[in-house]
Image 1 (tube, helix red, strand yellow):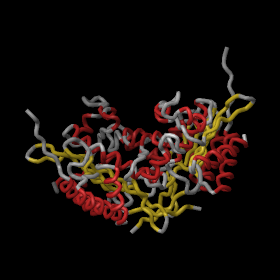
Image 2 (cartoon, chains in turn yellow, green, brown, purple):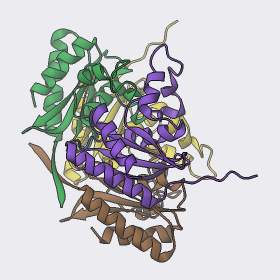
Image 3 (cartoon, helix red, strand yellow):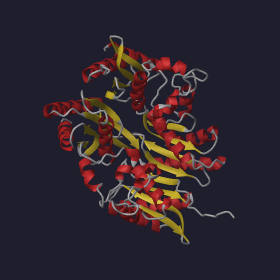
Length: 137
Length: 137
Length: 137
Length: 137
């Protein structure tokens, strides 16, 4: 028995990213927006003009994290606090686990087929942009 | 005295990438195409459907290398061979120096303002795609 | 459309570092002082006699962090605490994000053109030295 | 019995670097110049305007290598070629061993007390700059 899985295409990723870029422009938060596939590997990324250089890595890894655990990063954040059940998870996976808002799984027919990650603004701004991006999927 | 330097914009990067994607489709070589700015930092990336997952990193780092040394990676390749003057340079910069074809600096008025990196096919295919991408700049 | 951006020159960096060194001597806190350019890449660094060896990396990465997020590292520190919006950001960028005092962006005409990072003493001492260094820009 | 060792001071390092910078300007090869101490740890570094960004790491690690093995890096280069006795040494020390010209130990009374590393030009240019730098010690 093989496992079948579906994954976002480049076309999907670019549509998701364009929606994120549009929302980021609208709320005035220059952002990095990245999409990974069902394997957690990068499909596409953009850094808007004047967005933080340090957020390249973060956007890609928020997307990775959301797919790696099929969980939005802001939900994971709660579990990663001191005293909580996943405290320390951010040290795993060679530093790729991001435990703050902005990463959201992309689902089709209930199945996670990829994820989007956004970084460049406050946690609230990143979440807003990521939700707009995911909604275009 | 500050130094003024110019850098590719996201719009530039997306035009360069679209040209690379178009050439890659034409020659049947599903590719990763990445563009970095004047500081060597990622501006945009795509992985075409069915392109190698291991080439995500390579495409980004070919672009990095072409800007880090203001040199096409296939030119650097010759100097990095055993017995040549830069033999071993591929061990520097935490493994980010790629010494095979597919990375090309982007120049405006003689100044390097970024670079493009392509990975997914043979060295010849990657170089062909990178040249088509760079020509759109 | 290319983006024009300005960056610190070596001459700028050396003036900033000399001011940091002078302040560090005055307060008796042997320090590492580093300056990065607009791309986050190192321009110059000194380790004063008897300053901690482990602070070489920290000074360079405080400067990187201040430019990567256009934010002083002690401001980022507050946001990186448990429960705060950027908790866990210190795991990103391959361990280069420093979330304690001593990194300050260098601005010209409101634009971030580089950053200075200081490490070697207490948080308060590092901050004092970094402020004296940045003031010379 | 304790082992006594001497090491370059920051003042030494800055004199060595200034001599390197002067020679680099004279031969028209914008360079990175770095000095490490007897422990192999960075004392000071400069990147001249327009010198390659990828050479920051290389200059520091050429200096590290020259001290780590008390050997000029161009001598080590010969031993690191395929078939030679130290082939593969460039994979050790987490990628810090540079096996091409430009790193020279600094000696006082026959004892290695630090090293200088230069990167930014051809192997020949880097070697010329490193020799001028070391001669100022």
